[in-house]
Image 1 (cartoon, each protein chain N blue to C red):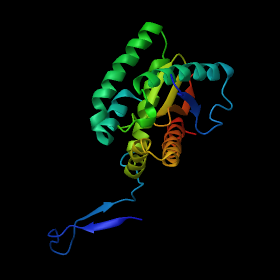
Image 2 (image 1 turned 90 degrees about the horizontal axis):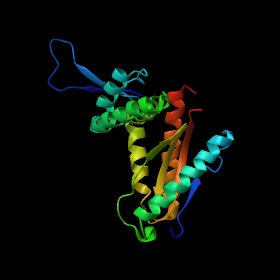
Image 3 (image 1 turned 45 degrees about the vertical axis):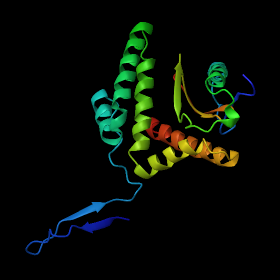
Image 4 (image 1 turned 120 degrees about the vertical axis):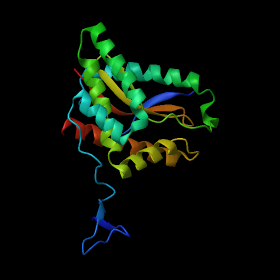
Length: 83
Length: 133
C-alpha cells in the first residue's frame, strides 16, 4: 500500500475513549487506509475530486474521516462510541 | 444583524411588505426532534438532493438492527443525519464545510491541512450540538 497511513486530527482525538473503542478505531482505520491505497493508486499525483467526508460504522463505532489522497493518508476527524 | 428588504412594487396605501433575511449564520430551521418524520422533513428542506441516500441508509439501518437484534444501527443513523442537518441548516457553515471538502484536493499540503482542520471543526461542532453538549 505504498506510503498510505492513517492519523487523527486533532492528535488527541482519541483521548478519553475506552480502550475497546481505541482498538476498534485502530483496526478500522488500518483497513480504510489499505482500501484507499488500492482505490487511489499513485495518490501523490492525484488531480481528481477528493471523496469528501465519509462515515464508517462497525459494531459500536461510528467514525468520520477524510481522505487526503495527495498526502496518501486518511484522517479521522470524529469518533462516536455507542458503547 | 438583520437586513430588511423592501420589495419594490408592494407599497400599498401606507403599508409595505418586507422580507427579512437573518444573519448568514442564522439556521434555516431548528434542529429537528429525533424522530423519523421530523428528520426526514428536515433533510428534505436543507439538503433535498440527499433524500435518496437518506432512504437507502434508513433501510440499511433498520435491516441491520433486525439482523443484529440491536438498536445501535438506528441510533447511528439518527446521529449521522442529525449531524448533516446541523451543518446544512446554516448556509454559511455548509458553504465553508463543502469548500473545505474540495480544498482537501489542493496540491499545497498546508492548504489541505487547514481544510482538514476546518472540516473537522465543523463536523465535531455539529456532533456536539446534536448530542446536546
